[in-house]
Image (cartoon, rainbow, N blue to C red; front, top):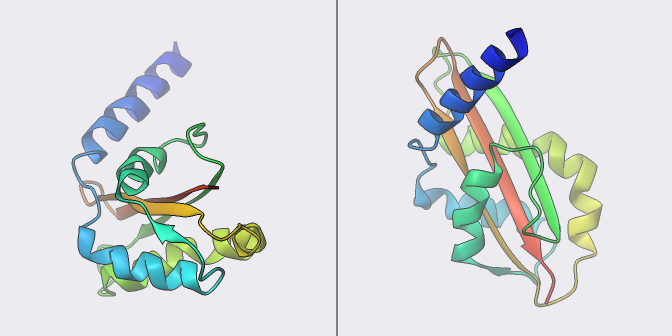
Length: 133
């Protein structure tokens, strides 16, 4: 019973969070982060749209590679969304950046996420999806 209740709460939170997609003006921040590892990739808007949903689930089977991160921020934190985005992706790219570095020329990618401000703290969920040519 406890497990069912927990899953229901998580599902409801995820449905509510989907309405808080990160703004599209963060595309340049995502590109900046990715270009540190590979300059031969091309942004794909469709993958970016899928990345918002992929940010909420640990597994996503629609891409060759997925990098995902999430972080909790205090309501008192006054850093910009771009700064928060860098913090969320710092550790995932330290772990997986080498895989991005070795993706072939012509790889497409898209990144997005969810920013949930409804709780006691702000939560940012982010994913980048990559497809080889």
